[in-house]
Length: 297
Length: 256
Image (spheres, rainbow over the protein chains, first blue to last red):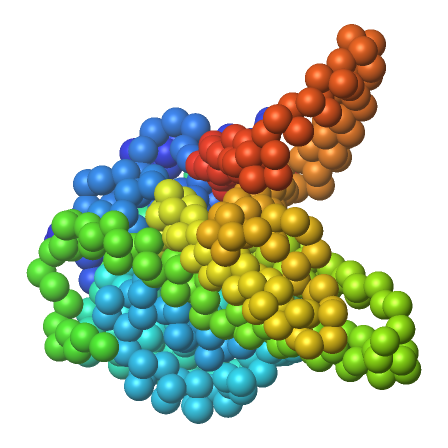
């Protein structure tokens, strides 16, 4: 694994608020990392620090070993697509696409055209007059067609319908396979992107809660359900991150589960099921599902 | 378009040349050429035609040997205010976009500088040439003064061009510095900025009055002349440019 991004003791404080709090992590080159967490967890601040738009209060973040702040050597390889991106009032999508090749040497104009057609983006309409979803499409097209070695999407799908979101995920995966690059995807829709992600970075209150390959996360968690007594026996000594009771039945979500435990639970007639990445993260960040399932507006 | 069948093995850390990076900003600012070029030219053309038509009508209704004042009109000078607005919008709206696309603040501002100089030189040349044509044709044949309103526009082409360029640059500079304050400190910055400006203006006037120095102030402008005064405006323009740079160098997307 080649490390491309590294944060060490990274801290960002605003008047009295610590948005990012002594964070350490590394990202491997040419992987898709999910930056997951609740609103206000520090995701956007982290991405701003990564692209040199914010200045760290303490600690450091580097791309290929160099600070990104005012550093064209590394910034020329980045593309940051944010949900709240503003465009000049007089711009149409075609103007954005015309200016993009200057910023992104790998820009693929044909690909951008293809994506615009697929996402049904009116490229000749004023951006101010685009719907929320169409505005998101502009960002998605730039992010994909830029083929920037470090591409960062911050909640890029607001207002997009399910079909368009799926098109984005499919295109992202296909293009990533053809042109490997480092992709950071910040999102609320964890289950939708779960199959895309290779690595999960879960941030809450400015701290990293989970920094793990997605496969490992999934492999080590399960729900064990059945009669209360039998379940409690099976999970004794394990880390139960969530328990739900319904009469005499219990469903326990367990982290750090081994095959042995699974086998013996099954033998005891208990139901052992997988945990979705979203459920797992919700449990670990101590939130309630409704807050996390708040989807697109 | 460069096709990359596979990603490069490591990040190529050699930066692209400064000219390429600055050119990228210029390209972004000119991406929609209507705003900085075509729209103002179109407006200028329409105003000129309307003025010619109206002044032509007025002329036609006056006997050929009648007494006739020259029609003086400053319609062309909306261009300066228009470019101030272009400067404000460029900094306010294109700056965050360029940062997201991997530009540095420095490369963006240098690109904006090129953009401002190109437009200033271009419009000044246009205005100076139009004034010269107006002079040579006796006000388009009907005594209309649309471009050559002041003595400076009726002087040598080069002087008019120099004056126009300096004035245009001043408007770009003021626009850029004001927008930089907004980008960095948002509404609060605007309050402080305008309050400070009013304070400075009133304070300055009061100081001159107390010192009884209005005569000297007047004498300065007489001494400097129109072109000289425009030359001195370079000090303000340079101050604005430096201020914009210092302010934007630490601007972040979440400030304000």
